[in-house]
Image 1 (cartoon, rainbow, N blue to C red):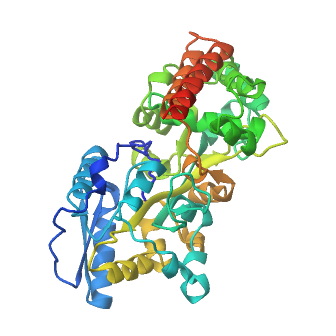
Image 2 (tube, rainbow, N blue to C red):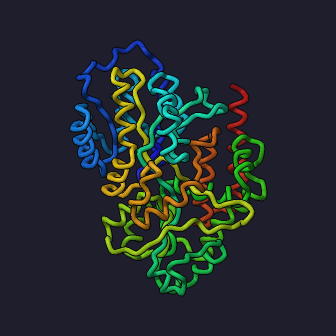
Length: 439
């Protein structure tokens, strides 16, 4: 699965998996050359690197690997959906979607379970990859999607979403460029100084509500802990609970302090990245892919990565992270074994180091980290403190997620109070639970 956290993302781009995916009466993809493996992807920044790796693999094994690029992400998703309908998916592909979309492809027979390959040789393949990256591609025995437990995808890189800060600007404000604020109190205290300096505080693509949801989840885990967050999703704790109101109040405190950039709730991530790269903003909430983006915009930018400033010392600050992009093997492909061999080779240390150096994405192979830049290492250091909705085993209703995220936007612009948003979100939650029980 490709759970992509980039600017196009719930870069993560969710699309509906049509019921006709389950039709199996259509003609299969024509059998091509046995020594040619076809891969579809959407990663425009990696095509040249993929082609070089393909050249190396053919020279080594005699097997040709063809990477076919389809972009933008929306076009890629449409192509994957059409290919699933006609049972003509390529040998290897990715899904830009959420876990429920992933599960639909698995249950339709489109995706090969690769657990036996991962566990061969005492689990050598599995053990060399980050566990958090594998978790995005795995279904546990107690998953709520009805999928047989196992591993169904291969992560080719990882990502974490956290905060970055401009070292020079933080120093100008009287802060330590090597020690960014670790608590919300210290973070908010910078708001008046930022306003007085004429700079922007924290920029982010909050016009894309999934990024609002990401930070809200971070603070929910920090305020009340994982168990209570998941109990809320299961309908056992209401959004009107004091802890949820406390989470919503954090966003009001940020706005009142002046730490949030002007126009944040309508800002797209590309504009946010430009503001930070051009040294107009002190902080940004972004993912590890930003290292490559900022380098292209301002190679001399001096910045560091940091966790969102914590509110509570009882529970850890947990960030979104895991597989940035993953590849899946077509279960109906006559070249399944060749596809497995290639992905095994692609995730070996040498190939992972090459991808990290050329694309500035974090490698999925744990043994490749010694070769990455300092700033990428700062993002990688926090991967084991990460989580993501796709590994929780339960999913919140989309209508509830939308209400929460848009409610936070309304708090930031002063239209609603945290208590009002909590009441509205809980009403929608009760409505969705009622619908579910009546089915």
